[in-house]
Image (cartoon, rainbow, N blue to C red; front, side, top):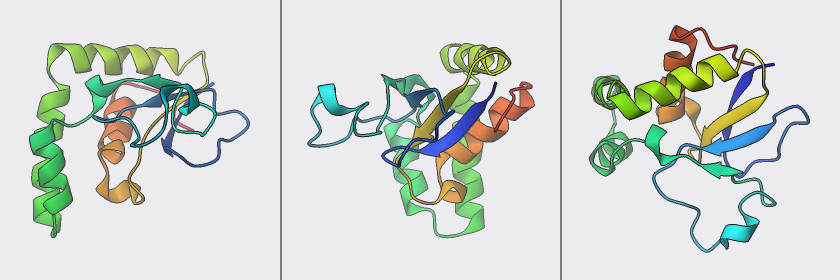
Length: 128
């Protein structure tokens, strides 16, 4: 049992479980009924996505210093009560369930899901 960190819209792995979309916006031009069948996500969970201002900061990041600034800001947002409780819940669920969390970004190293991976690990989540 574990949580996987994935890129939304990619083929699912056999043991991936429920796919949770931690994105601010749903996929453009895709009817809601096709989100799961087209491998986007089963559940949309924007509480674990960056605010619009931080999304813009991440997209504009050109240096490691810029990216570190985004990471600090996103960690601060995830320390707010609702995201903090959601992360705590997912960490506990990873001990007995298979599921995945993800985003659309191609490069995980420059995506908020890399920060989510670290935050979940800090909480003792079992990460695949």
